[in-house]
Length: 161
Image 1 (cartoon, rainbow, N blue to C red):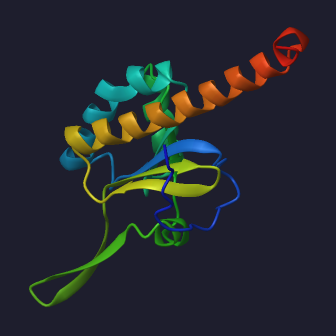
Image 2: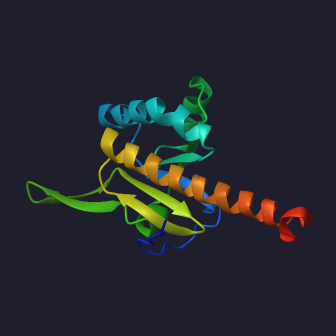
Image 3: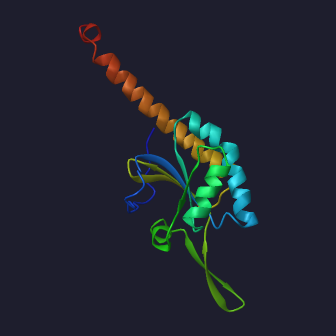
């Protein structure tokens, strides 16, 4: 399996990008944000089975996100993201409504492996979350296979054959 690098992103420093899935959402207080959260809650057991942490970045205040995480019993990680962080992830979009410009947060999915984005989806729906899951599953299988091969070939009995 060839791992394709989508685009290099600057590491924000506080997030370990070794193997993680990051999604950006608008405010979780809005109905649209809640709908995206429901989709992630549906997929959360699958990502936790293959040990891939899912981080949800939002512009909501850290206290609101902490209260939400305390309310939900989930392995999803919630974090406040500043405008600079969202710009580094290229999640900010300018939208013009009746001649007035607004900055909105695009809901997108980024799968990082060894600090490189290997999957990016600019929409968040069941299909794109499933594609991210399959990509993460492929990587987990590749890691398992190389670790198994290394353990097997490191044994003296195998090396003498």
